[in-house]
Image 1 (tube, rainbow, N blue to C red):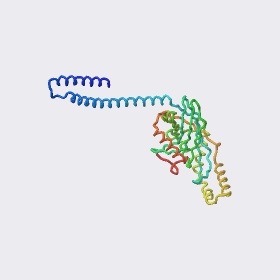
Image 2: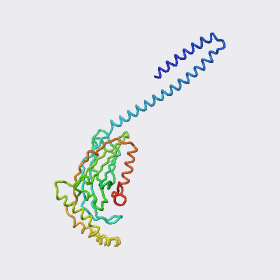
Image 3: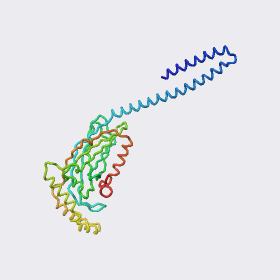
Image 4: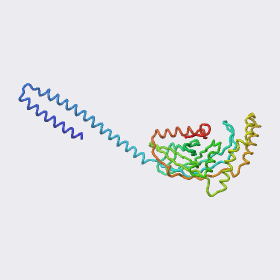
Length: 319
C-alpha cells in the first residue's frame, strides 16, 4: 500500500508541475519557483504523515506476529505433568502436646509422585493440597504446607512427595468419612503449578472424593471407634489435662503425659493407620496455562495460608 501512495503522490506532483509551468507562460506575475516549492513542501509533509502512520501499522502487525510466534513456541515447549502413586492414610489417633495446648487428633498423610510425561523440563513446581468438607453453603478447609520441586527433568518421575494435614482436633474429617451421602464426603483438592524454561506458567488441578474401602466392614468399625474416642476424650480426660497444665515442666509432667497418652491409646482399636480410597472427580480436572500474575498469586498465597498446617483461624476456615 505504501508503494501505491508514493505513485499517487508522484503523479500529483508531476501534474502540478506541468500545470504551473504552462500557467507561468501566460501570466508574467506568477512565481513558478515559489509555488512549486510550497506545493512540494505540502506534499512532503503529507507523505511524511502517511509514512509514519503506515510504518506504525506495520510495526504493530509485526509485534502481533512476534507475540503469536512466542506463544506458539511456549506452547510447543510445554511440560506436561501427571500425578501417580497417590495414597491417603489416617494416622492412629494420639494425644498431642504443642505450644497451643493439649489435643486428641489424627493426622492425615497424603503421598504422591509427579510424572513429567513430556520432553521438556518443568521448573519451580509447587505442590499444594487441602481437605474440604461441605457444610451447607459453607466449606471447612484443612490446609497443609506446600512442597516445591525446583526441577522435574523431561520424561522422569519425582521422588515421593509427603503432605501432612494436622489440626483436626474435633475429628471433622473422620465424621465426614462416616457420612452415608457422597455429597458429604471430604474432598481433597490438589494443585500443581509450574513453569517451562521459556517462562510460561501452568496449573494442574485434581479433585478427589475420600471414602473408606467399600469391601471392608472392619475399617468402618475402626473409623467409628477412632472418631468417637477423639470426640469423647476432652471430657473423659479433662482431669488429667488440668493436672498436666498445673504441673511445672519437667520429668514428672512428662511421666504423667505418657500415662495419659497410653490410657487414651488403650481405648483405640485397629493398627497404626487406616487406608482411604481416593476417587477422582473428572469434571474438576484442569490443565491450563496461567499468567505470571496468577502463578505468583498462587505460589505466594497458598504456602502462606498453609504454614500453620491446620484449621485456620484457630480451628475452621469457612469460605
